[in-house]
Amino acid sequence: MVGTFLCNSEDETRILAEKFASHLEPGTIVLLCGNLGAGKTFFVRAACNFLNITEISSPSFSIINLYSGKYEITHIDFYRINDMEELFPIGFYDYLNDDSIKFIEWADMFPEIFTSGYYMINFINKDDVSREITIKYYE
Ligand SMILES: Nc1ncnc2c1ncn2[C@@H]1O[C@H](COP(=O)(O)OP(=O)(O)O)[C@@H](O)[C@H]1O
Ligand SMILES: [Mg+2]
Image (cartoon, rainbow, N blue to C red):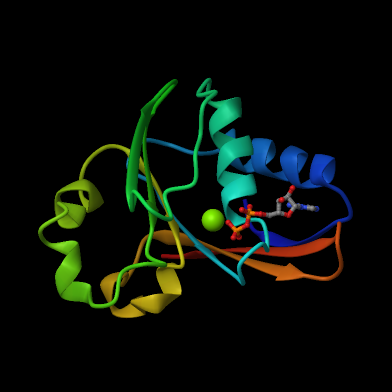
């Protein structure tokens, strides 16, 4: 599922995330980019809720959160990673190739990691409640 969507409320973003989640398959990589507060974690939470995972917290401090629902989910946040080298000891590359669905916030900090076969979702903060959300797929 790809396109540009204007979501004028949290509910509209939630509905978009649910629709997106309904197309996901094991192993899919989903990169999420956009400013702090743009809605990356909100989108992941809504997508995961749809996949029967209820307690989603932001991984901005923990870096990697693992969940299990309809699918295994790996939720990662690069925000506090200073250098790509830091990704080895936390096991990032083991997760990258497993069967879990990967949601990676701030993935554009290290774009060289991702070469093909991923969704890229960009969030633009239009005002307090509106977000422009663009979903692309790179084969
Ligand atoms: N249309 C919308 N879509 C997504 N989030 C929204 C929307 N309107 C308001 N918000 C709020 O914006 C904030 C987004 O925060 P968060 O998802 O943590 O951002 P990020 O992970 O990108 O830093 C949340 O507090 C959410 O409730
Ligand atoms: Mg976040």
